[in-house]
Length: 465
Image (cartoon, rainbow, N blue to C red; front, side, top):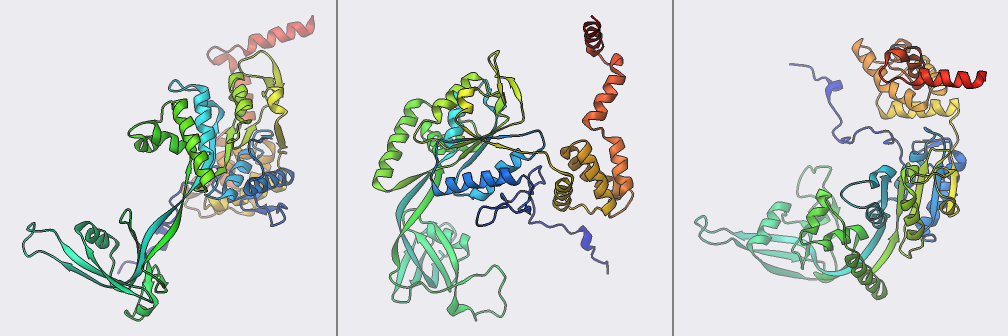
């Protein structure tokens, strides 16, 4: 009998890919909004995380809307990680739209239309509606099948009960099919939506818990419902304004949500939707949930986009805008003027600025520990120490890239733990920016269209004169 190799079995629950920020679970704050040193995948950046936590609390309380926050710092200091932590902490209820600055430049739609769509993706509408539901425990399912196939449709009877009453319902072919799909049997507690006919299996009744000797772990036991079989329930749907726009913009709008081919949406459609949503708010049927729009690499926007943002932030239904940049004093795109972070002064004046600081060696070590755990790589202390030194001297991103490369080198020599030799091997195979630049400077004359030599000569001549 062959021996089962446990090492070859894979965990099927983890189907997501390991990404650059897949280890981020939140901002790592305690109940009093104080950042923990290492928590939820976040390391260091204490002042920046504390500031982000205060903004997060204001968003949750619904205190701010139409405000803007700038996360500024050097490359590789965790700006996107803070934004991802905010998204995870907000939960699924609050919309969080994420775009890069260069995504707005497209031939299919104008820049302002792309920005408008991004803004409306970040504004949620919580719609409340009352539906009639039949909820009870199944006593008996009786299905009469015709003697000859295709002679007549199936018919049947469904007996449902609560603690106070019991009723028999006649079943049509569609309901019989739905019951078959859900595998409903006597003893199950089910809910039937009267409008759509959708059947939801809530669990199995406690009174039938002794029917079988063994039950699967997924079997959930619930109490038999009390009161009447027919009940009115309030159902809450959470959608974004953009989704409502797309569905109403064309006949097959619902399909456009899946294909992503939304195209330009007319202003009249949006006005009608805004009017309708305002009516629902007055009637108490809906409420607006201002979410977060995160624009990474915001310096890639031009002066027209910045002017649009200035106006859009004054709108009463504006989300919280979070932008990030790694530029210093640079030219504003579309002009010849320079400005801090490449953002016009009038927009900078509206922004709350959070700055991120470079990581210390200790923090780099902790981040590498978290990434090793995320990527399922075992590494000894010596290798981690060397990788921390490489991260401090070159960049954190380069050190993180070497983790998987070193793991593959270790796998090739049939090892299980990454050692110093594996790190040395991949360090020599893959160059960092400094070594690559040094190599280019040495062999620049052998590259095509090399102009660095001429520029150096010109600079030297200027310095001599």
